[in-house]
Length: 194
Image (cartoon, rainbow, N blue to C red; front, top):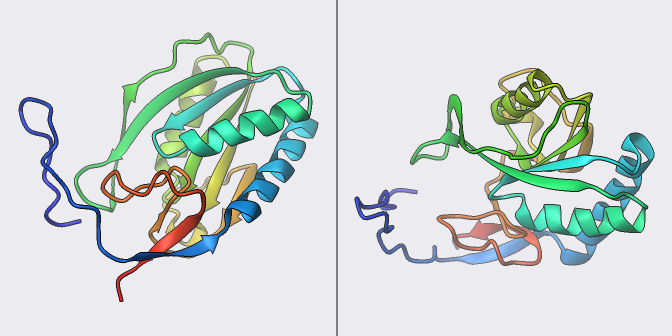
């Protein structure tokens, strides 16, 4: 990610070119759709119809939208809120410190919460969010992640619902980005540089 400048004092980001290379598909749109449907069925059976969905932005927004529609077809009627957590600076490795940059506004006391994130890697962000919601009085907090990288775990945590387990690949598409590019792709893939 070298060459990616931080935001300027005015808040504008230095112009960044879309990284070169073709994206090789890891999971197609059809595979993702089928998996999201299966996850929705499992979540509905486990948590029931009345839940609060808390989506961790930005990477989970596409996954969350599709999962919410799939949950509707299984009779789930969720409230929805969003939070933004940061544990990454300018690099690609987690700093180990998590901070809230946008908090939820809904009351969580007594709620059954489904916490949605894009990728479970070190586990620090998910553990931080789960503990925060429990401290605020949630009755249940269960997690759903699109991708799980178990080899990258730095803390003992697992998600109750996992889309796909993958190795240590840098993936893009379906909401996941590289320098804010590639989120729009309907599939998940890796950038091939040759």
